Amino acid sequence: MNTSPTYTAFLSRDRLITAPLPEVLSEVKRHLDAATQALPILIFDDQTGQPVDFNFQGSLAQVLARGLPTERPPPRQPETQKVKLLARHWEWLHAQPSGPSATLRRLVDAARKAEAGQERARHATDATSRFLTVMAGDQAGLEEVQRALYTKNRQRFEALLFDGDWPEGISAHALYLAQAAFGGEAE
Image: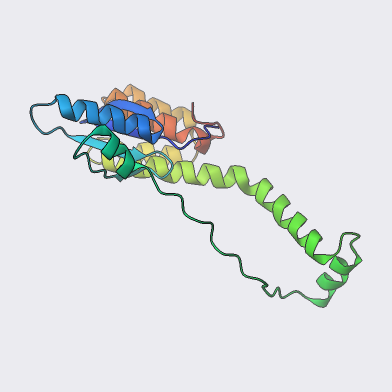
């Protein structure tokens, strides 16, 4: 899986770049500085499928300084939280060799790991759908493409994207975003 978050810039319906944010901002700034008129550029956060706005005024260094997300401190964890369980659950927890707290942490971690693939697939499906709604909202067959996405019918999804008259950049990027929705990783 790609470890650093990616963003994608489109010039009209053509994909310019998919890369980490500094590279995308640099490429978009280069295009904007070279243009003699306003350009229809949209930048998407590939993790959410949402368009994001950036201020491209000033030098590239200023754009990068404004565009990079600031590090936020992790949320403060509460000192204690109460867990309500039935008596039989408490009896079982107390009988575990590592004790109730360690056993609960282990069970939660195991459940999170087991559900990680499903959660990743759901996020990829939602991000792909959001992207398609923005970039292909007026495209014939959008509902069928999204239906194939949500029913996890990869073959139909790809056929609808690439066999019709969809712009290649949009089709290719939708497939890129949808990889985890179909059980794969974004390439």
